[in-house]
Amino acid sequence: ILHILYIISVNIDDCPDHKCQNGATCMDGVNTYNCQCPPEWTGQFCTDDVDECRLQPNACQNGGTCSNMHGGYTCVCVNGWSGLDCSENIDDCAVMPCTAGSTCLDRVASFFCSCPFGKTGLLCHIDDACISNPCKAGSQCDTNPVNGKFNCNCPSGYKGTTCNDDINECTIGPNPCEHGGTCVNTEGSFTCQCARGYSGPRCEQDVNECGSNPCQNDATCLDQIGDYTCICIRASWVLNAAS
Image (tube, rainbow, N blue to C red; front, top):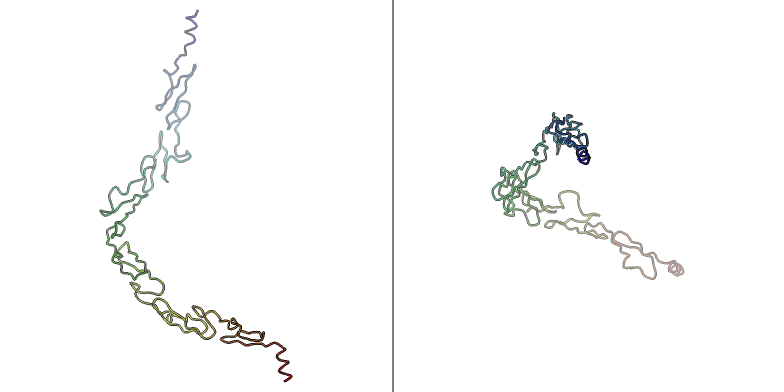
């Protein structure tokens, strides 16, 4: 009797006659089995194709275009990417585009050349014209990456190819000095000689002649342009009238 019970308790392997397809693995159960499908297939017997292009996220990365196939998919990658799912960045530095002595930095569908001192240009193939310091002190020198020529960004008050020409601010437009002030050109700038009653860098400030309180005997000082007037108190006027 024990022998008979032992035979009955042994699970029969249902996988020998399984119907799993497309490379699926049969998983035996109790009086049944299940099909463990590869990623490309689904369904009870792994006969239904998985549309990888409808998955979220898309099977193709980095903007690639997905096309579903029976049992798989294909990706058309955008420029700069490769691989089955467009996940591999193409190394644009592999062909060594930069001039010897420079450093190539790979980017997506492009590259950047980091130039050594004295070299410039997209491929570091041009001598840097700014090395000779052609611009006047205080100017900013920039090198054209196409032809290697320099360009000087001049500070205020200077002009010219190398910023050595002084700008005469007194003649290039309206008088920069206000209220009739006289403009005097200086190296890189100008000064203003103000008319009487005005002060400041551009003669924009009215001088308050009453500031020093020039009126006496408690009189009120009235400021004017380049001058002042004292308004005397009434007691003084009565005294003058009686005399």
